[in-house]
Image (cartoon, rainbow, N blue to C red):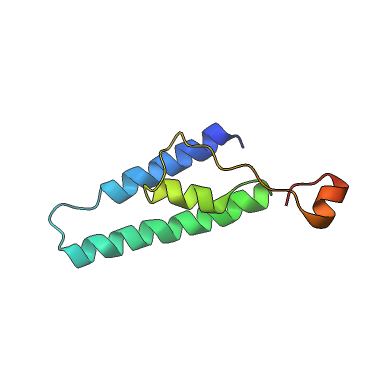
Length: 89
């Protein structure tokens, strides 16, 4: 999968959060959002399994609205043994 695919998935989850039924009381809206975030966690686990470079924390920040959809994750810092082997941690 590509970054563009990840962005589409995040956008769909953002839309799902925003589409909580208007007639719901606040506690029901929170439960709806919680359910969507649980789905986001399950999806992120699978995406990470598919691509070890997938950044779950960045993905969650985008879905929660803490970062814009187009934002790029911070570069990974290479340290210790990984640096010696030329791998990102």
